Image (cartoon, rainbow, N blue to C red):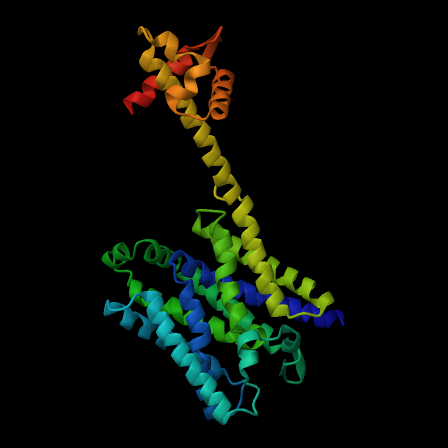
Length: 369
C-alpha cells in the first residue's frame, strides 16, 4: 500500500518537474496558449502511430506526437505570419481542428482501445502505477515514472547546454540572430521538447493537467523573482509541492487526482499573487494607498508654499478652510493634515499651518520636477 502511494507521488513529482522546466520559457515568451494547443493537437499523432504499431506503449507514439506538436507550432506561425489573424486566433483554429481529427479517428477506428477521450483529457495517476516496466524479469517501476524521468533529464540537459542561447533568444531574439545564435532553431528545439514532454505525461495526467503544470508553477515563480536561474529552480519546487499536495488532498476524499493537483496549482498561484512582497496584489494595493497619501501631503505643502509670505497666506493656511482651497472632502483633509504633522512637513500655530524646512524642501523639489 505504501509502495503504491510512493509510486504515484514519484510519478507526480517527475511529471511536474519535467513540465515546469520548459514551461518557464513559454511563460516568459507569453506562449502558454501554445502549450494548451500542443497538449490537445498531439492526439492525431498518437492515434496514427498506434495504427502503425498496434501498441500503445510503443516509443513511436512519443515521436509521432512530438512531430504533431511541432507541426501545430508551424501551422500556427504560418497563419500568424500572414498578418490576417493574430496568434490567439491562429491557435484557436489549428488545435481544435487537429484535436477533432484525433477524436474522430479514435471513435471510428479505435473505440475498443484504451485511447478514449476521457483518458486523454483527464488522465488518472492512480492507474499509472499498474503499467510496469520490466527488464530481464526485474520490476523497474511504473513506465510513466521512467518516461517522465527520462524527459526530465532531457529537458534539464537541453536547458543546461543551451542556457545562454535560450536566455538570449527569449529576451532579445533580434540580438540572438545578430550574434548568430539561430533563435528559430532554438525555438523549434524548445517546442519539440514541449511536445515530447506533453505526450510523455499524456497517459498519466491527461492534457488538462499538463497545461496546468506547464503554465502554473512558472507563472507563480515569475511573480517571485526576476532571475531566470531562480525562476527555473522555483518552478520545479513549486510544481513538486503542488503535485504532492494535490495527491495528499485527493486521496482521502476519493476525488480526481489530476483535478485536485490542477486546483492546488491555481490556489497556490492565487495565494502568491496576493501576498508576494512588492509584486503581490496586497503589496500593490498598499503601495497605491501610500502613494495617494504621499501625493496629498505633497499637494498640501505646495499649496502652503505657493502662498507663503503673501497677503492671503493667513487665510490660505487656515486649517478649517483647507478642504475648500484644495477641493477635498473635510474628513480627507483632516487626515492629510494629521499625517503631514506626524511627518513634520508642517507645524501648527493656533488654527494655522506653517511649513517646516522639511516641508518647504519637499514643495521645492516637487515644483522643480
